[in-house]
Length: 631
Ligand code: NOJ
Ligand code: CA
Image (cartoon, rainbow, N blue to C red; front, side, top):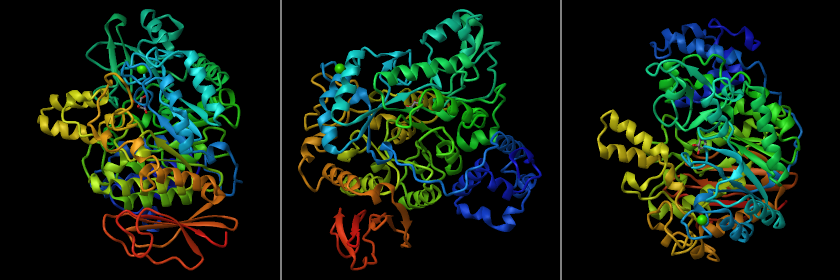
């Protein structure tokens, strides 16, 4: 059924055939602990949407059904049938390393990491086997959200250095055969950006329409949308007698992509950086750029389910694909310029519409569903069940045929350390870190490492709120305080999810090695035991495990482009093969903290790597990789 014909009278099976509908249903099924296959049951498929409120005891309401139908109708596109040819590309073969510039290496003792500092560490990255570096934002910014609030797109923040330092960094990378991926933050700018300042000062300024301004009264926000960083998504500007939209902090003003002149400015800005030698971009919350015209109110039930009200009006807006196609055609008009979308909330089918080779949009996306178990959020303190990771990747690897490519990551600057989520006990840290690395380097997709992950860095033992720097953490604490939650409980929640776990200085050696001064944020002292210098050359270390697996991946076409064949295994074991031509690998992973039985591979398999004993049953969290001797 074409999307425009969908109504409340449509059946679940019509929804399941629609890319957005199918992702929503599968994700709901996962949340309530059902297999996504549940929707293919003919009885379930025949259910009409209009009967869902009654069937679910009103847990799903009419407004939810209407919102779902309206959303699906904005996506007329169908996922291409499988069978697209494989397209080879440097970024599919690459290992990418994310640097959080403020915390990687300080070169001048002011306690803040900088571009010259990064330059001084390029040989380390090269020796690790890194092919491309992704830099979190280094643009001029008041740093309300650590650089994701840009004041000037064409300048480097003074604390980080100068444009000359930037050019030197690009040259340093290219000389070593590495590439540079910049963060591109174009869903919003800082309120200190010249465009916003002019828009605020003059309602007739051409920049007024670059943002979402709404004149009105200070006590009535234009709609009920909420910000990801607590409270309303609207900020009142007394001097202008108007509200302006900010999905993130109150200093990150959303840009209005309906405005063609704004889009042109962005295209030109991207081209300006490309001319300086940038090889690609990571596009911050890029699926949020198109908002439903008129900014209608968010559905309260959807708001409760996902924790943020209004999201159905922008997580996949009506003109998203059109805008991305424009960016691809005008800004990234070179197949070697990689475009990676950060796309929270996008499932596998919608992901295909964003990255399919037939689409002319993005090369890959970051989706975050694998980082939490169903029903959990980042601020819940719980032990992550790796069985879910196995189900998640098995599903995505099977879904993504040759015409699609995925990213593989666990850590970044927006999440606590995944190793700690899986098992916070220090005695398991090394094994879990090696297991996660094995997943990243042996599944099909581009691995993205985040600084410190290669040494198995874990969460920080912060003890009080004052040690944290992140605006999100502080806003959340204020919100919980205002709603009467006890201080100890507030701290426990914030600690579970704070983004500062991964924003502390990189641990180079037992003294820290990050700065000769006072770091802008302090870690908990764990760098004394977990650092690069200690692990260099120690073949049992997490660092050397990364190096060895990166080298293995580089040496093998099967590990990059090969198909993924999931084998049957017990619940606690994950077992898959990667195959290209005659070359083949077998991977077995123990997903639990107990010894797990393993069906021994046949005689044709030679053990390449084991993070534990390598024979007999799998030790807790052990990872083993075999190569077929036929290959
Ligand atoms: C995603 C970025 O990764 C995060 O750090 C930031 O706070 C938001 N987008 C807003 O830019
Ligand atoms: Ca510095």
